Length: 159
Ligand code: COA
Figure 1 (cartoon, rainbow, N blue to C red):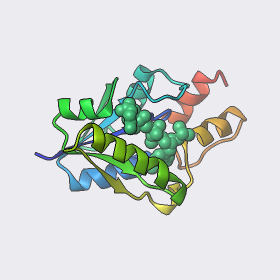
Figure 2 (cartoon, helix red, strand yellow):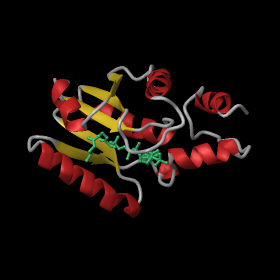
Figure 3 (cartoon, rainbow, N blue to C red):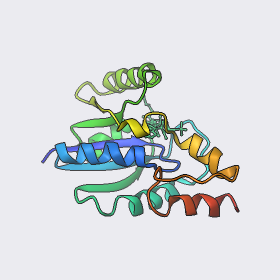
Figure 4 (cartoon, protein in one colour):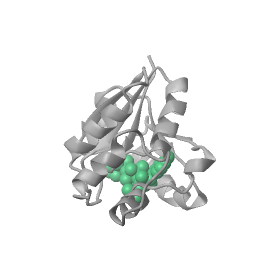
């Protein structure tokens, strides 16, 4: 049974994340979408809210489950017996950040590799911050968010 984790902040999850998740779910037996509490970012949604929104968003993907975690991602990976971590590599601008994280995680646990998937071109320049900004300024997002996420954003932002 090959289990991988797909960690992130997911504030909120977008169709770009779902695209990566689906690709990983075709390759591995089990993918654990891992919602990080300790991300160094100030988030709009609490970790419990992010976990709940992710759970709704992935409920139709059979071999994916959602778990929140705190502390180091390598410790969480060990706890759930993951063989590797999945990350999405979008534009070149992601590369240095992803490389530094992957190297630090390998330093922390030398049996733990990062595997990169590329998203569909539609999602290349998508980010959760951009989505939050557009919605908070009254815009509407078509086909970039799983069902229910736009509504959750509007509710959270009192719009
Ligand atoms: N489609 C759309 N957007 C994507 C995406 C995709 N396929 N892949 C990444 N993004 C966006 C995210 O929405 C996010 O946007 P934002 O910055 O506007 O919020 C950004 O790219 C990157 O975020 P994300 O994928 O959520 O990762 P992250 O960099 O926020 O998460 C963790 C980093 C959680 C993996 C890292 O902080 C962590 O491991 N924390 C645990 C503590 C730890 O072990 N730290 C040491 C790590 S070396």
